[in-house]
Length: 266
Image (cartoon, rainbow, N blue to C red; front, side, top):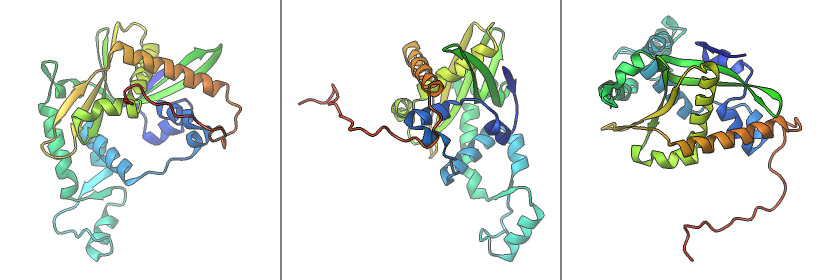
């Protein structure tokens, strides 16, 4: 099934399809891939960040900022009454959003290739789900991904991925550590399957530092990096297709020999 659709996170996660993050976990082991991921505090902060920056209308529905006279202590009468009056919203305090406000201002003021980044984001589909089919080894493979922002004009498309970081200058290391080159290729492949008429598809990482002065840099991987992502994604899907179905399978039981890297001098 090929489609581009805006759906809630739960509906996306419940939908069939191999995602980039699943395949990377599957490379580690099937057991890791099929273990349900618990939401950590860091993940909650990341979700809040993306919602505020990319979908402010959804932020208004999901969160509420408490007035100054509401205590933070959840055990107090004041907090309980405020929570009772807002049962469907997560309560935040001004301190929780001060950082987000500063980041949003920096993003709105940032220039991407001579134009305000806000221009691209305001005309993009945000948090949009992509579903596409691939045929590998004579088998149909359903894939999926959820893009932060998708900008299409004419026969040109840009996929934007916003990442909060400690130091923008360290992002190149993160690309390797977290295999972001695979993410870039995976989403570009999906968009090409959905819109074969596109002549140009780019994947741009927007990195912004979480602490003041909230520096911003954008990154684009070269063709060799994208091709490496394509090769690794292909191998991962093949591995999945040839898997024996044992969801409890962990690492192979053998000794791993660690080779000295070329850069380490004797």
